[in-house]
Amino acid sequence: MSESLDVNVALGPRSYHISVVSNQFAQFADTLETWMNQSPAYRNALADGSKTALIITDRNLSTLHTPHIENSLKSKDWKFETAIIEPGEKSKSLEVISSLYDKLVAMKADRQTVLIAVGGGVTGDAAGFVAATYVRGLPFVQVPTSLLAHVDSSVGGKVGVNHPQAKNLIGAFYQPLGVFIDTSTLETLPVRDYRSGLAEVVKYGVILDSRFFHYLEQNIAALNQRDPDVLRNVIARSCELKAEVVEQDEHERSGLRAILNYGHTFAHAFEALCGYGELMHGEAVSIGMIYASYLAEKLDLISHQETERQIHLLEALGLPVLLPKGTRLDADQIIDRMKLDKKTVGGKLRFVLPTSLGRVEVFKEIPESLVREVLDELAHPATSDGDFQI
Image (cartoon, rainbow, N blue to C red):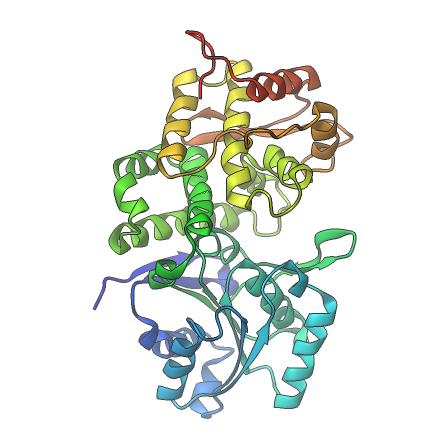
């Protein structure tokens, strides 16, 4: 049996475990029952034999990974049904949520019915919102299947759906009963999706752990080959680092959780202006981190060498560090879009910037003129000695 790594998210009565394994889907039901036995609220459901669940998954995964979860539940005599939603952001809608409520009503679901999300971030967000709101709360388990969901969206308790005017406008903070991560799901993940998730992994090293950043530098070949031993370590450490932040700022009240948005102020603007779908989220974050690091250089916060280390690692993992060739984005448009960022206050730009590898801070009132310099210089990167080079 492959090694299992366990990460604890310490949130008092809302604490839970993240189990990081390889090729252990057969053990899912055992793990679920262990988590339930550890919870006074759900222990009785097992004792009473009322083991019922609703699996929510997307159409792409319904014949790929979901059957492993179904077979594991069958082996432990669970009664369950499976609801299939379409892949993509359109499923994070109140219309789709309502159809899932209908499914639960038809099942005569109660507060002991476990909701199991099998999929990427969209499935986890939508299923989590259903769990948070149906009968004011169902036990909820995440089974993320993409690297981005493994290290980011499945950890922290953010659930929600989109409004026609904005993404994730309707939502809640609702922690799961547990998160079951099996690295075997990454074997079938398209290469671009896999690399997109690696950008968020690199981000954790820059913002919180220089030793982890160095570990990534030392294991580039294994990461590119999707080595399960290295992946378990990388995913578990990424989850630990995010958990440390979430434990201190669960509901985004203190501002600490903002450090998780390193590179995202640039990235969100690039994603929107390039047209959603042109850049994957992780690709935009990779580019955004380099723009943010270059901005930090201009403020004398870090050395050029520290920016170069990020560039070399990201490129070695197959990620972009500049906008695609031929992209023409107007600086005014980019800055206007940045002002819609949730970190902006009173129209003043705020950025998460590194002060060294392994440490970032939120900086307020960054001069627009400096941001324009960065946008202009990286749109036309210099190659002369001493200048920024890609």
